[in-house]
Image (cartoon, rainbow, N blue to C red; front, side, top):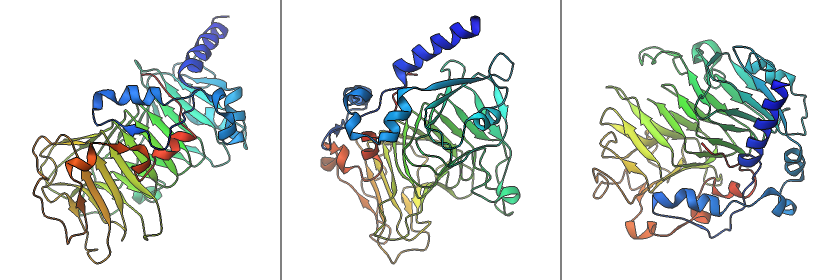
Amino acid sequence: MARKMTCIVLHAALTTVLLVATSVISDTLIPADKSQVDAWFKNNVKPLTARQGSLDPALVKAEGAPRIISVSKYGGGNFKTVSDAVKSIPDVNTRRVIVHIGGGQYTEKITIPRSKPFITFYGSPGSMPTLTYSGNAAQYGTVDSASLIVQSDYFTAANIIIANSSPRPNPKQKGGQALALRISGDMASFYNCRFKGFQDTLCDDRGNHFFKDCYVEGSVDFIFGSGKSLYLNTELRVLGDEGLMVIAAQARKSASEDDGFSFVHCSVTGTGDSTFLGRAWMAYPSVVYAYTTMTSVVDPLGWSDNFHPEPPFSLENTRTQDPVQIFLNAPSLASNWVTMKRKDSSAFPISRVPHGCFLLRQCEHSFER
């Protein structure tokens, strides 16, 4: 009886904060004032029932009757491991399955296959679970070293810590890259999640992704891949030392591709003083920092062309606050990156954020912390 009552209460809470997909008008502005971002977000959220005709019918069906299963490493849930909970979800799943994960550390390597869409990992804000494993590129290959690999569409996570416990890589040795997350499915969203690692912490592999109120830490290329993603109000923390430090290694390969990363109302923090905001891992990377605060952890050059000076690439910084004002007169790298002027950032429409904002139309779920 107690378990039944718990499920009823949990379902009511999740129904309130989870089953709200968003709809955003194409010219809706992301406010320049960071204190207004949450209100902007809530004002642009529309109930699922109000716009079913504009959504993927499979998504509408999936959200209509969600199923909740629970994981507790201490017992009392449906499962003791997250992997067993994922295995219990049928292939070609057509219902939203909310995996409520109790507090504690879960040391396991988790993969959600492409055949299992509509999965949510949900942790309690006051007792966030940690999903962690110690795998590196030498053992698994870089992209398969992740503690959590998500290959399916419409994945959502809230209040989850995802980490890789492998030690900081030795730059003189190969194979030290160690991912916390690889997200390869389309229309994924993350709320109040924390991603911990060193090199290659978050593989934003491919697809449309949205990160809100998150935290990502690392050392080299700690957000990388070919995703088309928006990071909103997210802290990017550099774990600096004397070696090469890079935040974003975006993998756009040609001018015809439309993937890229947008960091909007984020903060760059950490240690050290020579971190690049991004580097040209591939020939045509596309990265934008908008309304983002930066400390002296960032190298005054801003960007590294990574010995790809010949083709144009888009690496931009728009800011309303910059504690050290390091970009006011910074030279461009071979004239291949642009510092957008302050007057251009006073009205920054969602439709003009190059990467990821449009996916708010289709897939988001609103979580309270």
